[in-house]
Length: 267
Ligand SMILES: NC(=O)c1ccc[n+]([C@@H]2O[C@H](COP(=O)([O-])OP(=O)(O)OC[C@H]3O[C@@H](n4cnc5c(N)ncnc54)[C@H](OP(=O)(O)O)[C@@H]3O)[C@@H](O)[C@H]2O)c1
Image (cartoon, rainbow, N blue to C red; front, side):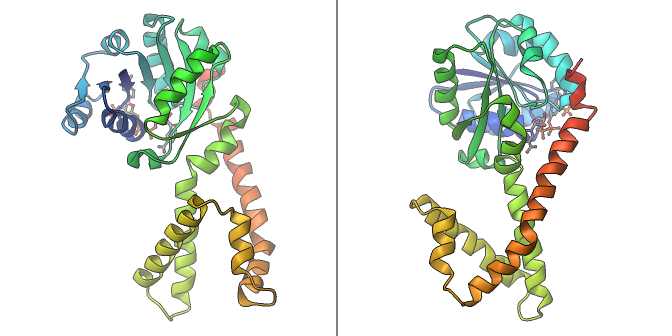
C-alpha cells in the first residue's frame, strides 16, 4: 500500500511512522517546511520525501491531509481534484464537513481522529466514513487502519464527544492523574516521584484488568467493600466529578462550534 501524508507535524509525523512500520507499505510525505519531512524520512527507510502535494497525490493510494484546520482548505483544494475514484482522501481535520470534503474530489473521503497512542501502534483511531463510500471502500480503509490501531467508526455528529474520549483522552487522563498526584503530595507523606510511580503502576494495572475482560464497573465493585474506605472515597468523587465531566464536554463542544478556524470550512 502507498500512503501519502501531507503535513508532517505531530499527527502526520506519527501516522507516517506508524504506517512505515507496516509490511509492504511505502509512505510519501510532504510538508510546508521541507526540513521537517526530511527529518521524518531519516527515521525509516519506508518514508520518502515528495517534492510537492501533487507528487504525493499521484503516487499514493490513500492521502492523509494532516495540517491545522486553517491550512487545510488550501491543501484540500489543491490535492482533491488530482485524486481519482480509486484513491482515498482522508482528513485529520475534524471540523471539515463531509459535504465540503466530497466537493473537493472524486476520491473516497473519510475523516480520522488519531490518538497519541498510535505512536505505539495502539489505541483507538476514530473513523468517520464519507456518506458516499461503498461498503467495500469502508472495509479497505478499516483494514488499513487496523494495521496501526483499533479503528472505531463514528457518525459525523459523534466525532466531538468521541474525540474527547479517544483523542484528547490520553491528555485528560494524564492531567487528572497529575492533579491527583499533586493532592497526594499536599498530604506531605509522599513526594511527587513516589506518587507518580504509584499512580502510573496503578493505571497500567487497571489497563491490564480491562484488557483481561473486566469492565469499569466490575473493577469498582471488586475494590469497594460496603462501609470500607474505597466506598467513602467513591461517594466523595461522585459528588464532584459528574459536573466536572459535564463541563468538560460542554466546553470542548462550544470551542469546536465557535472556533473561527474550523468555521473556515463552513462557507
Ligand atoms: N495533536 C493532536 O493530538 C490531534 C489529534 C487529533 C486530530 N488532530 C488534528 O490533526 C491536524 C494536525 O494537527 P497537529 O497537531 O499535527 O498539527 P501540527 O503539529 O501543527 O502539524 C501541522 C503540519 O502541517 C504542515 N502544513 C501546514 N500547511 C501546509 C501545506 N500547505 N502543505 C504542507 N504541509 C503543511 C505544517 O508545516 P510547518 O512545519 O511549515 O508548520 C505542520 O508540520 C489538525 O487539524 C488537528 O486538529 C490533532
